Structures are given as structure tokens and as C-alpha cells.
Length: 381
Image (cartoon, rainbow, N blue to C red):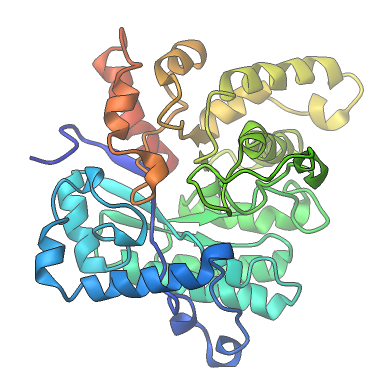
């Protein structure tokens, strides 16, 4: 019996990259210039762990021990289907998900912060090739490519190339586009291309979302471990400000009238929580009422700001959030199921955790959460 017993689309899953995952797909002139995959302070130990996970693929006995009940099994590189496509297809059989968005995990550390545009966009192209290679072998898997908006011309080239490869969504940093707003008219060709292709942009924890100023970490105490007990992920103060980056990005998309100009554009806010969304919608409309007399761009909107978000953006809650309360507060059309497989943050029973908050919700509302909102985001609604 599969883990999911209903039609269920997963808006967040991952590949755990091996050490040469990006470089194998890079153009020859950029391959040797790409930095190594950054694994943080535990780099050497993690490299050994990756090698061990690769060796496990050849061990039938060890593989048989984890090839079932995968949601409750090992996570990270040790998970079944973490980086091998054949295993991932079988893992998806066990999970029972109809569709699954697939993000990378660490590969952006090789190029996304580079000041050299050739490394930046050459790395992005290699990443998108690697994602397409992994996901195009099973129609249930949807490859999430990447694009940096810092150079509008090169960004458009990578979007167009990614669309040819079969990329099904584009992860953009939740930050300004270089020195400009993501709502700058120079970026309109990108939003137009995504609208025409019915392919969404997505924001995700990672690029652009670490907005906590460093001085807040200097509190005279030893630095604690992160959420997973190591050193490179979220700490409590990072967690508290996670919503700030997507709120800034979406505010720009609304008030710079991107959603007004491109009503067919769709977006997703993935693994950044969603408990903040109901109040964010109210605050958008409050800002609209306060500034429409003084700001022509605000006055020119033909819908209330919250209506653009409801029409065009979807959000994945964390497994510990009270999604039922959020749906009752803000409506059933905004939120998406996600497993985060094979990352441990997704827990060993994400469906169960969400279901425990759903008391009083009808089946149509649940179907929107597990399936229809995803399909609308992906252009199938």
C-alpha cells in the first residue's frame, strides 16, 4: 500500500547531489572554473557519507532494507532515491504521489553567488541540464530549474533554454534582481516567457532568504547548532524572519504591477512557511488603501493586492503549522501539500501532521490542498 491513499501532488522534493552532479553537465569552457560543491563545515565527513551512499547502490541487501516505507526511512543522501533516478521512480511508487516538483539541494553553492557572470549563468545552465536529465525520465517528476534575474538578457536566454530542456518551474532568488526590483520593466520578457509557457516561478528557502543581519547573532553566547544539529542551516532567529524575503519579493511583484501586466503568470512560495500569509494579504490591502492617493503605481492597480496573490501565487506550509486554521482564515485556494522528501525537515509523516489540523474541512477543500491548487500553479487548472 502506498503512503498516500488519495490523489496527491507534492510541491517540494529534492535531489541530494553527488560531488560531480553539476560539473558533468557543464560546458567544457566552464567546467574547470566551477568551484567544488560546498558542504559547509562538515565537508570532508559529508564527502565520505556521499561515497558511502553511492556504494550502497551496488549492495542489494542494504538496498532491500530501505526500498519500502520510504517516507519513514533514512533521509538525506542515505534515502532511497536520493540521487539515483531508477530508485527515485520506485520511491515515488511507494510514496504514491501523482506529481512531484524536484529541487536541487546544494548545487547553487558552486555558482549562484559568483561575481563572474560566465560562472553564474554557466553554472545555472549546467544545473538545469542536470535537473532535466533526472526528471525527464518519468512524467511524474517535474524539474525545477534555476535562474538569476541579475542580468535580464542572460536570464531570458537561460529561461528559454530551460524551457527547451523541459524545465517545469524556475527557482528565482527571493531578493532584488541585481540592483533593481523584480518588478522592473527590463524583466518583463522573462515574466512574459513564463506566462506564455504556463511555467511558474518559485521562491524557495535558500537563495535570497537569509536576511537576518549578522550582528543579531553576536549575543555574547556560544553559537548554537542549527535545526538539524549541525552548522549550516537554520537557527531560531533565521527561522523567525524567513517570511520577510518572500514578502518583500511578492510586494514588489504586486505594487510594481507585474501581476497586473501578466495575469497568466503563476508563482509558488516553497518551504518558507505559510502561517504568515493570511495577515500578509490583509496588510497588502491596508497598504493599498493607505497609499493609492499618493502613489500612482498603487492607484493604477485594477484589483485589490490580495486578489493578485489569490489568483497567481500558492504557498507550502511547514508540517508543524496549523494549516486548517490558515485555510479557515484565508481560504482554500492558497495552500499546497509538500513532503520535502528526502530532506528530514519533511518528517516521517507529513500527511498525518497536516490531517490533524483539518477537522471540519470538507473533502473538496482537502482536494484543493493535496491536488488542485498544485495543478493550477502548474498551469493545468
